[in-house]
Length: 386
Image (tube, rainbow, N blue to C red):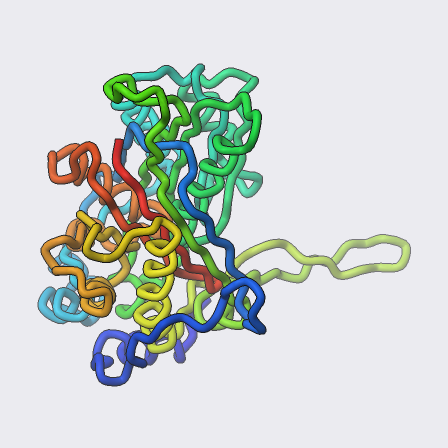
């Protein structure tokens, strides 16, 4: 299996593409309810729930840019200058992504100060589960959730954790709900799905997991009896016509079955991850500022109200461009891309976990989050930490 030549060439265009080639940011005209847009969109204002615990886990094996010089034709400066990545953590043979999800979940529960038995919903956002039928139930059982817990996987690639957080918020905010706490996990091991002979693909991805506890219970430190919302507003889109620009498509192998009338079925498999880098770069730098602005509008806030900007950790140039178009200072960008690479659904919770645990993000801080990736899908949520 080979990653397509168009993906190889496109990534070079992604890396070298000048900002002048990207369409200038303009107010969104698409996705609004009641328009003729071909894009689908959902959006909402504040939901009565808040994030209270976060954790992360990554493989022990670190592969630096220097290490990759012996694998493919590349060098450290070439990778860092084009992506912002210095190293990545990779699962090796026999290691499990599910175990990372379990560790991240335990950390999140510990910070939240609740037990696994208090969790009503577990959502595992992943495109690379250990089990094709999903990992959420196994993770829930491993951390000690009861059989009353509803657990399921959600697949939305690099948008997965954000979509999962909004989904959990909807469960916790529905009228007359009996649910109190949700655990949202973002975990991926895309190193298993790239061509390690292609320098434009293998340099990008790392493996890891992050997890966050969300509750609809009021903060005991708040003297007011009302719950101060922590999910202040969100907006999300998809455009299936962009599927061809970023995918990991099915590839079956013929299997002859000797029925009375012989038939040819297929044994399942997948191609390597394929990406049209130039189009994905343009998509991200055009649509992410728009969707963050939409979420801010739903939250009745402006970019000036944001303490931190946390984007999917794909490329440092994308993050810098989005911040510039939103007029958010670069010092407000949360990033750990240099140390982890692109961990897909794991990237936002891993970066947030490090920021909270280091003391950078404090209780009450406003964080504008945005995920974007395959589907194509993208979305933003404005969160108040704690």
